[in-house]
Image 1 (cartoon, rainbow over the protein chains, first blue to last red):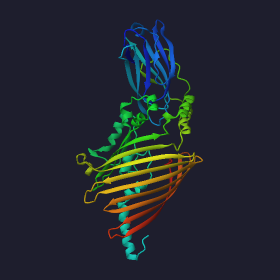
Image 2: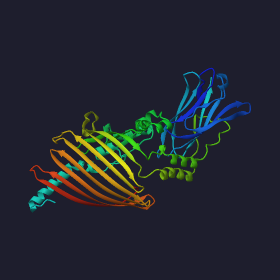
Image 3: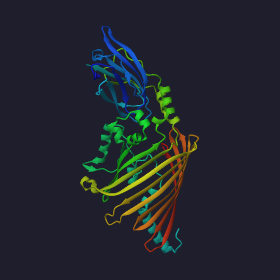
Image 4: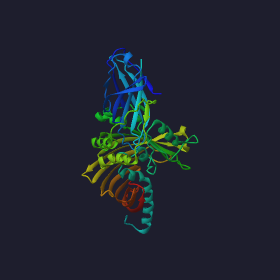
Length: 121
Length: 342
């Protein structure tokens, strides 16, 4: 199961960002919502390294239930496997962000990743 | 060689042999030390040890197991870790890029090595830390290497129709061709003679019988090493070391200091020429010294197999108890076919 991240405030705006240890990386962020037919997805942004992305949802009710997925290409030229921690942060207007951390083994041979978090109320 | 009669020459040879044994550390101190070397290994003269460098806490825990055998400290193990990187792991690439002190902290290396432990000798160990002052071979700081990696790896993967079930889903390995191209991004965009510098310190310990409770500190050491490029084909390395040992088991304490340099020529992708020079001095009751002049040629024969031809002139300078001064010179030839570039 993908980890969950709590919407930090009742009202937005909300910003979300991903960092992956001290690796540079390229990413695209997708916002998935469940529909009767399955899932629909919307490409929100693309970039490199840690950048905050403003989400289109304006309130806790709108944002909860969405799933955020980053498609990532890790730029890894190390010569060894490195256990790496990634952090997803969800910020609202308040001071307490929602945060999810996870670890994985970064290896140069497997640079493509999907990072998934489910947003809950 | 000493100019004297045959008997005196014999006595001098014996004295020189003793001095050679006693001043072995002076020779170590006169040998150039790379900024990336494990100083724990160097501090106990264990250059034959293979250093394990774990990339995760799990691997680090496993590697530390090599130091314990049957409840005792085991000789013949060497591990180097970067504790901040392994444990805290919270530095982003941008922070790493922007702040040189963050880089130094993340790359701060701690090493542990053991050797000795014969029937009468204690297990000797060293705990060392190394602070990398700068390292121009760091690929994370290399725009050309990163641009190359981006070209090789291409755009991110298209997203799946439904979100993956796991928080981190690592995709299958890239092709062998792209793996090779990725490795070339680092190799071809990093200067082989990139500028590097590091300082370090070590605490040495003795453990009689390998019994942990009897471990006692017996000395310390410090060093600095700098490597600078000279054009495209040359690199100059220089290192300085100092160490001391406490008096123990009837032996007086000792102090050692030395300076070593290496001029390295790498050309044609298959020829390496090394010219080593160094001076070391050791005080253990008397002063002894070592001067080193060495030349090494390495030629890549095929693949990663290298042939090596080396010659070293090693001069012993000793101040004997009867106030005579002696110089002994040795010439050593070495031929080897190595499996990789040293």
